[in-house]
Image (cartoon, rainbow, N blue to C red):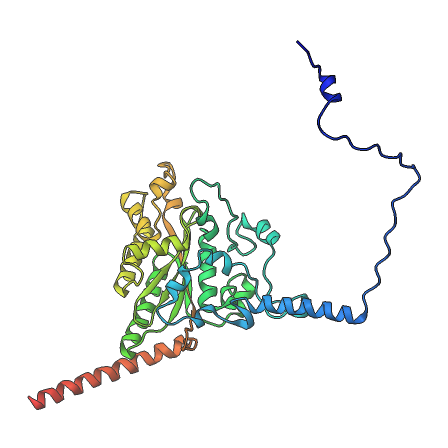
Length: 381
């Protein structure tokens, strides 16, 4: 029997051996490459023109190019489906900053945020609180498509407002300075149920106006609630979008639980895409109940689930030692963000004071017309 050692295998391997290389001289540098000739003035002009065209094409592809409002290109009644067909709607709408003047380093009318900007601000919602959370496809509760779609409620409110009203309006509550520059609109914030009453009175006035005109104002409302103890788990923001037929979209997400597309698909499955005016009033009454609780119970949990689609008993495993201050809703805010445009329809005029002033006149005229028709019918009879 022949025994081969490891040394034999190394000496008799089948792999071809590399030919011996001549020893390299220690002071023999690699061959130098010829220096590149400098760019000619023509080449510099062509390069600059190419960069300019690329930036122009990128800017023109933005849904906000030139101050555009995405909702303006969609027919009335089609905005829900238009939002739903974009799985990353919220993340995309939030990926743009407002206009930066060219003398401050901006270009054209828009700049898209860099990936680094997103990552650095994502965990805390960014400087103004509406930056989407980072992608986390491994999250057992919210991962994959939900993570891409974004679940943070402030991000969704910003995205919906930007889609219907434009970037300037979406940013007009970022700071006290922005709020001061914003046009005077209807809205307010306060402690307790009184502010809900004001919002409900406004909705009733606008509904009566729409009934009198035969067409309801196309308005976007931004709403928010919070607790006295500033418990983030119970705070929430969302949008209500009034349709010209008198129905409403209720658009929201809830951080760590569901995204806007998931909420919209669930609403479609329940037949709750277009909410009747009476349904919105019932929801406001359920919201009032959350301002009155003395302890978290089944009724409170049911109302929170009905309004915001989160079962707090399961999601938070509510601590019985937690005081009512951390659970009971304490303050409510709302504002009329804009009157939104649609394909073939200009931006809804935003003059609430004039509209309310004309409300009584229009209703009185409608009443007189009805009385005249009744008298005419009686005379004919």
